Image 1 (tube, helix red, strand yellow):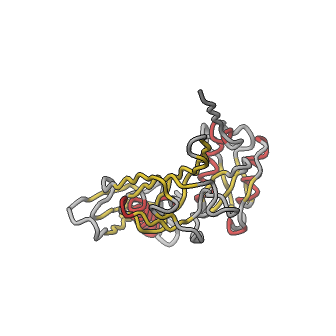
Image 2: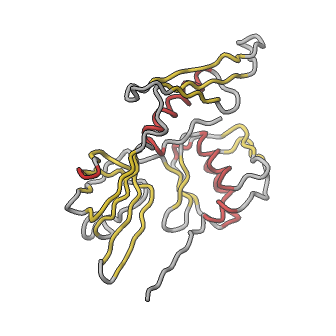
Image 3: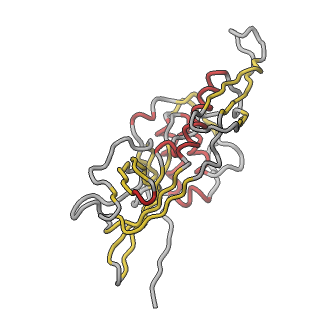
Length: 259
């Protein structure tokens, strides 16, 4: 016999539902727009001041969910939306602060599984795009914008060409090319450990999402700092309290450059 309880927090409504309010916001800050989008659902917003000043115009696209609109908005300023245990929308960047407690095989890691994959790595990545004419360009269409970045860790000839989103200058292509390289190398490693207890140390902080943790696990060939993507707390009669983590490199969670 057993009891299993599953659920989703309040922000699940943002993922499921479409927006039915005003479809354009002019001259408002990202924090104000986020608050307006979340208010009908009773979801509080935790956003840093670094989200910045007003956006000239933000338009919600027909058919997109509230969460999709929030993702686009956050991407404009290089942030990621997530949620916390209180059902609030939390806007943050992947953490750069290393936690004081490390995860070590044979100490606080009971078992672990690692997935190493080079499937999405390429020897060089080229991003191509075009943009409409501007006053400086004297009305010419800049259809030759492109940028190529090389990955020295990929020894075989494996080229990839990506079409930039929307209108893109050479600077936009460069930004997306470096993001493609960093994101793909970040997603090369997935590490899923089960750790002892729910807290980093007795009476200490909980293991939680967006924590950067040093990992030393020779069996899985992992010796680097990884970011916690999800944390699942478990309680069993025969095993006590454990936390199941899903972790990856910080670069895997960097937001994609805006269109």
